[in-house]
Amino acid sequence: MNNSPVNYPILQVNHRIEYMTRMMSQAMRKLAGIINQTQTMVVFINQIRMKIGVMFGSPETTTGGNALKFYSSVRLDIRRIGKITGKDKDDVIGSETRVKVVKNKVAPPFKQAEFRLMFGEGISREGEILQLGTDAKLITKSGAWYSYGHEKLDNGKDKSIQYLKDNPVLANEIEQAIRESHFEPTFSRLQNEDEPENHEVIPLDE
Image (tube, rainbow, N blue to C red; front, side, top):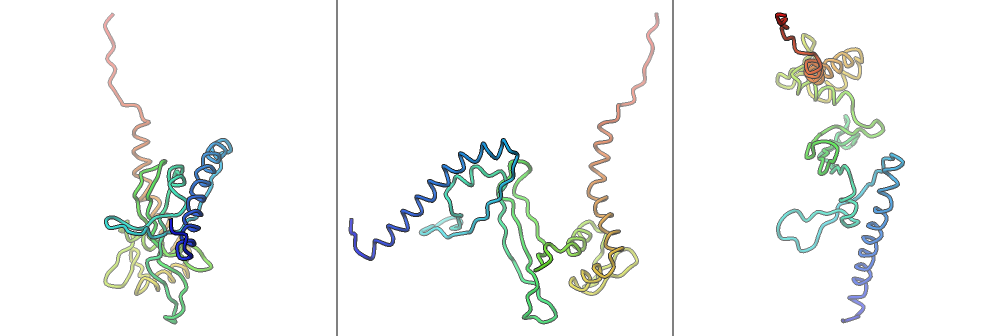
């Protein structure tokens, strides 16, 4: 093997990668039992790296080897897909975020969600109300205008979100309607399953 100064740093990098992968595998084997016994949720935050020499398929991968992927119950791919600006276009106040469920042992996987992540606030509640209300056909959109029933919200998504922030009573009403539209069919189905069937009982002649 050529131990020239050019190759020596590469050998060091490869050694660190192999060591980290091996340590992660050993750690996950020990942690799995402890996590199960203590009923603890552990969250790992990882980063995306690019695999070298990949001709087909996605070259993206995560660090730490395959142990973390194997032992994880849920894996989420979280990415920023856009930025949200204030009145000044150079003032970035949040980001449009997309989350994909790439693995799920406790529910159906491969679902996807998009939401607004606002700096200093978190996930925009009013943004979710506007989006979910539109998806449930509770909020109608005509051109750029959003309306709830006979009440017009505003022109454009950003202004409509601000309108909901300025009118919390209306926002709460729409949120309740969204919850009922999502969960009422499920409750009705479960209630029908719990109710005994009404069969006519015909007495036997003695």
